[in-house]
Image (cartoon, rainbow, N blue to C red; front, side):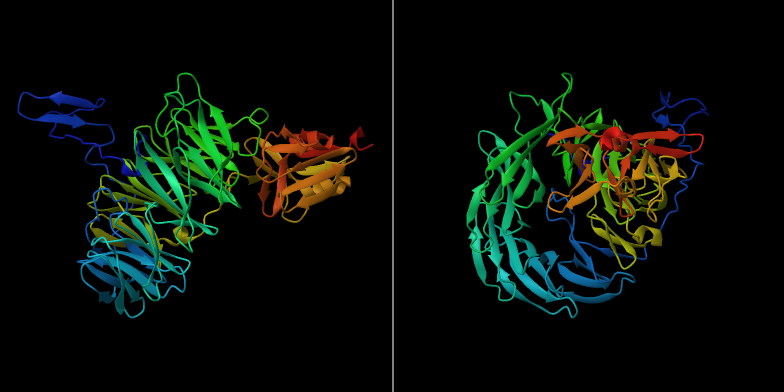
Length: 574
């Protein structure tokens, strides 16, 4: 099975003392005595880590994980300048900025979760199956429900309903009264609401083990359908369509990296299946097949040793070829801030590739296996299996500080009240956060990749005035010009369809449509590949100059000497 990057194991380094000075390459030397030695360039004792070492503003003890397989070692909830966590079986509330204890509640408690309604209550489960409702301001609470398992239940709140998973059953509870509404024994996890349907994942074993999804009616608890076959969790939902990665292995091998099934949310029937990125004969299939991410209509499929293939879900593979973002590291996250993120080839260190031009971005500092990576606003937070935590700027790769813990694994990093909250196994640390990391990060695949150009645009030899703030842009060795400025100057008719999100242009006998992020134009209902997808920058749609000329039938040239995009009308308008 594919290794989960969040569970990376630490490497073991045996060290002793070096019997004599060594200035050459790395060496492992067995001496005549009982000791052995190892030295590596750059690891000399007199070198110091240039990343500032931060001290926590405050710390607190956390209860041990629920079990050894828990990906989140302890539940910590943060919001509205407060932090809530479990210590010694009690629910504790602190001010996030100062660590001042505000109140404590209960004994023998397990997991806590915040409401998603008015935000004034906490719900916390106890080891005996009880569920308590606690006032966030005062810490006063009362038991409202007891699960049938006699063990700490898993709980969540969504849409004014409390969901409890215990004893193999998913249970719906009225959080105001504690009255049980229904039980469902098909779903094996807390649900995800998609529109008016609850989705609950389940691992089922028979002749083979498969991962499936059940759809449940939130009003009655009735199972509506079960997804057939073997699929990963939900990739995307849009309207009445759900998208899952099919991970069923045909004929003992995988021929394509991304196999995606469209599922009708009402019936659970697979209405369409698409396969993308044909694999080479020497590619080694793994199970599950390959990491696939959907972001809008963009699909990213990782192939080990090659990189990540990016393609548009609606594009015809025979017309529009997938774009390869090459990298030999392990794809772990993204797209975020216009980048895809990778572990180093030996699982040490973090780096990224910009989606637009595939350029390399190094994240300074991380040098050991990462067991947790989270991106929050402009911050990238890495927890290493050697106990070191790094806080980096996700845009620039600069490390702002590092912190030292005793952990090998971590719960989710959180930011609240100007503090970075680090769940490091049985300890909670709060570090003051530099203001630059609390700012929103630029979004979209084009984030940070386009640069303003000092180029001008002329139409039939006359300077073309561009809309305010809509100058010529460049990226990936391409020049991009604002679509609307030129179409208006040419006298073309432009119409936008909000349903399809495509812009149709009529210029003489030429009629075509384009869309932000779509790598193809539609001409007479057929796809025509573009050299690069149009991109929205500062509220204006930009297209590469080459594509603009081809679509409109006008001559477009780049005059390097005058740094001018020269557009000349052609006979296509007659």
